[in-house]
View 1 (cartoon, each protein chain N blue to C red):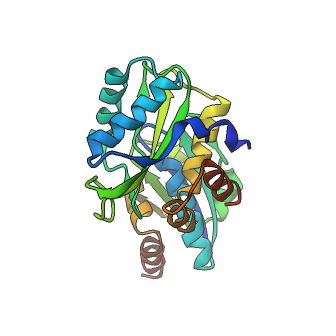
View 2: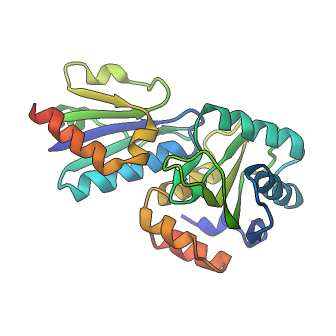
Length: 103
Length: 150
């Protein structure tokens, strides 16, 4: 499936980027396409385009704070979790996303 | 990107004496003071603990990334240390910590090259293999090599 994600954490320095990396690795290992936008101290990087969002089967928001641009995802299937869930168990999380989408 | 701008030998101690989390943070903060990154150790440490209050900085796999965004930080830097024993430290896998990367970030930090480098270091820690290899590195060069080739 096609996944788009946004990662953001409280101080915008560490967890955001660790979560991004874990999401990328776990999703790709499971055979999915994924693009992860990070919203950190340096601002937004790897920003999701309208077409990224339009084509996505699911939106993952791995964030400990309110993200900017949440309204981009209205009418999409959105899964919101704290960064720690992704960092702790990325493969398990992706497996749960797969189940949710099936059901 | 040039990680060698932020992974600096003078800020790495792979033989920390610390046997507790508090001692480890103190030892690493001391390095940051001596290398002109932090102006006030006690003030900086308070800001590091303010971040600890928000949630675990132990990422699992014995690695922790405490970080302080603090007005006592003059130059963005990372102090890296490894302890002999596993320290009790709030971590996602509950196993404690022995490899610590203490990030020092100025309060007014915006888009700077150094903050980008920090985020790049953090990204490498999302790779379990990088984390596993860090536990047995022997030098600053080893750390650089592992992170650069990630």
